Length: 315
Image (cartoon, rainbow, N blue to C red; front, side):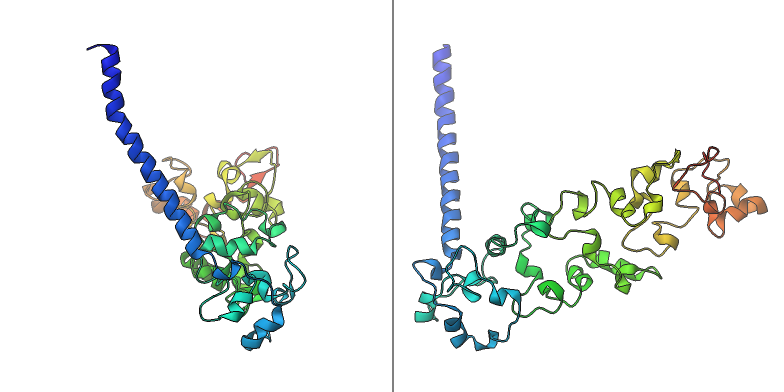
């Protein structure tokens, strides 16, 4: 078979595949466009602004709102578009036919469409990294956490506290704050947003400070910042290697009890022995290493030492 014939056979077999793929792509685009048109509020088609007083003529139950949103005006719209229409869009057609034509209803549009309205104003400072943030990428919209008309907490939150709101999704994490006898979040000294920027961050896990976990922790725990002459490897790696920042059943919010925590790395059969070594339980000199603060009874400078003889982080 000649090369020309062979290429012809390949072309005849591949051609239908490309045509099928192209048809599927065009179908997907058409479906997406149809969905966008369906979710688009009808009031936006040719409607004009009628003013907030017209809206309150029917929605008088909203007249008691004293939030900033009630007074705000979208800078791109005329002065008449103050308050309601700044978020819900021009309402002339809705006012003419309330049953048939509805304004933008945030609970009935996609998360992206709802957030797109909010980010016309909230685009800087706390909200600068909202696009492609963890919450935005998971279709969590602004109105999932905030309520303009009936907030229960500060910053238009739907719950009285941040911890209660975050627990609606992150239940396992928020439950940890009850494990330790002294927990600043539970006591109200800190909030979730004290460490995390919930609207997006350039850092890992939505952390506010620095570029890694350690810089976030040392923004408060500055005595652990270093650099030290003698550095402890797991400390340099990450504070969460040994501590659970959300809470723990162990002393100092450690992820495991000492000496078991230390023996995750230090597993030699000599000093320090493992808990499975008969030496640690059979002699008084060994047993005292599993009581009290265990390894930290002697190695108190466990985060690092600046002493010339501090290689073992001794007190």
